[in-house]
Amino acid sequence: MNYGTQYLTYAEYKQLGGNLDEVPFNLLELRARGKIDERTLGRLKELPSQITEVKACVFRLIEVINNNDKKTSKNIASENTDGYSVTYGKIESTEETKQYDGIIRDYLLTCRLNDGTPYMYCGVC
Image 1 (cartoon, rainbow, N blue to C red):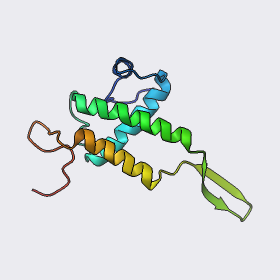
Image 2 (cartoon, one colour; image 1 turned 30 degrees about the horizontal axis):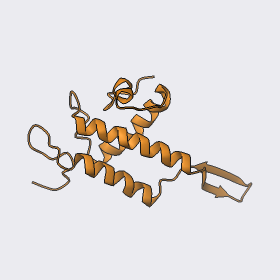
Image 3 (cartoon, rainbow, N blue to C red; image 1 turned 90 degrees about the vertical axis):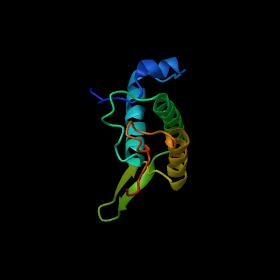
């Protein structure tokens, strides 16, 4: 399975002390990358390589996402009483969102692209 251009490779993850197997790592890296892309408006997707701060951010997000997944059992996402059916799914809590935002802000707030644009810039020039 191709996971696209990873911000943190499995080899780098292991060098940083990660202990997940490759498949769970790849899935969590994909989720962490999505959270970063959402908050940076996709600015990092086209970069040929990622700086240390991005790699460290992904490493930390993987750890936190994995821990949050373990803590939270399946939540009911929807329920239908007409014929009775229940759909289970993980709903990201406000607390988790704040936690992810804080990690991304801590690592990437001062980072800039080559043209000087901050990674997390969301305003108008």
